[in-house]
Every structure is written in structure tokens, then in C-alpha cells.
Amino acid sequence: MSLDEFKEDGKNDGNSDNQQSSRTLGAVQRRRAFKKQLLECEEVHDVVSGPKRNVYQAQTNSGSKLIWMHYNRKFQFWGGGVQKTETLRAYPTKLIHAFLGQLITEFYIISDDELRSGKFYMPVQDKDGNDQWKLAARGDKGRNREILEDSHTDICSCFE
Image 1 (cartoon, one colour):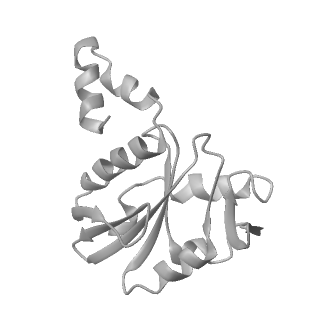
Image 2: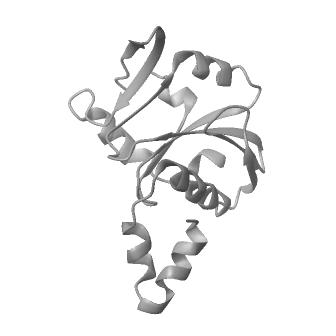
């Protein structure tokens, strides 16, 4: 169900914003809703499928950006493959990570440069022979969540 469909659902009860923000979504639905949220940013002109799974390419005033969406239904941890991360970093466009939860109000947006700046606790684990990084909200005694909450809750901030 799309973000527009959520709005339509809630029109009759007079409480669409509350209903919309409290409805839980699966990964595919959440990514679709997030695409619509991106298009609400003044700087973003278009959002299309990107070069890899769960990656969008956003066309902005300042050029193209890759948006890699990481989903976790409990909004507690996210991760990604080290090899995929390196592949996306090699593109000539800025890489941005979107950490999504089930609700349309649950997201953190952070540039790859800041994510790898050393501010975050992100252990690497071997998973079936592939290195995977993990960003846990409670990582470093909750410090990851504090940093994310302090400056990464504006969906449009990485496009300015």
C-alpha cells in the first residue's frame, strides 16, 4: 500500500496523520512509502531504481545521489554487506544510507562519509563467508541512537 493510499484510507475518520504514522509496513511497502517521502523534498526531482537491490537513485539540484535503504521492522539495528558497500562507494555519486523502520515516521538519513567517520559503533561480522557490518541503535551503550536522533531525522538534509 502506498503513502497516497494511506492518506486515502484515513480521510473519512478525520485522523489520517495519526493513522498513517501508526500503520506498520513490511519492507517492500516501507521502501515504496520512503520513495514518496523522498519526492516531497524540495531538492529532489525524481527517484528511480538504482544499480543494486534496495538502492534508489535520486536526481537532485546538486546532482545524482544513491540512497541505500536498510530496513528493520523493530527499528533496532541495520546492516549491510561490506562488499556491496564498497561497490556503491565506487560510483561517482554521493552515497546516502536510509535506516528505515516499519512506520513511515521511523527513519534516519546519513551520508556514507559520516557513517564511516568513526562516530558510530559498527562491528563487522562474518556471515556465511561474507563480511557484514551492523549498526545497532543500542550500540556503544546507546550512543548510536543518540547520534542518530540528534542530527539524522530530517529526510531532506542530505540533499541540500
